[in-house]
Length: 195
Image 1 (tube, rainbow, N blue to C red):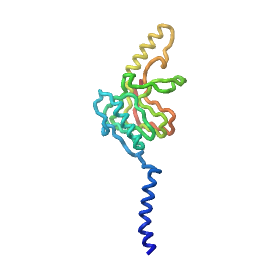
Image 2 (cartoon, rainbow, N blue to C red):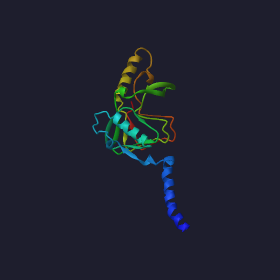
Image 3 (cartoon, rainbow, N blue to C red):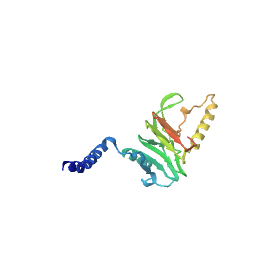
Image 4 (cartoon, helix red, strand yellow):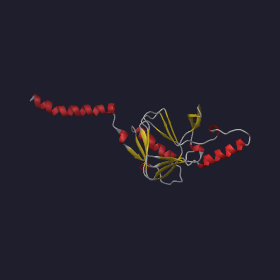
């Protein structure tokens, strides 16, 4: 009789232990995907999607992490900030296209030309995001021609005064900036036209 009760009760006890332990071990949300167009990001490539994409990243972090998936299409954006336990996946034909307006890239602590300074955020930013990944086969396009044209014009005008222009004197975003992050992977993604 006692043996029967123990056998009948044991599975319920194990289930209760497993259920109560889940807050300590957490669920594996690293496999959760967040396709941006399924979370309010529009497909009009002429409209800035920074806030909407950032909301998806923030939602993923709040839910314990996951992969932000950019589907086929062109998505215009300013600086995006990835958070702990988040990753970026750009599908075939997907393109994150950087805004050519510097006001879409806030000033942040950074390093440039061997100095610790405040400088404009990159298009893709990961501060203290261990295990961060960027995976293709899509494209991160900095849309940098306008920034470079300004730099070339500035460089030429400064040269007339007998001095050289430096990167610190112009306002342009970088393409990807990763700071204080370990075990970072960038795989099979096209990176071009940096600011």
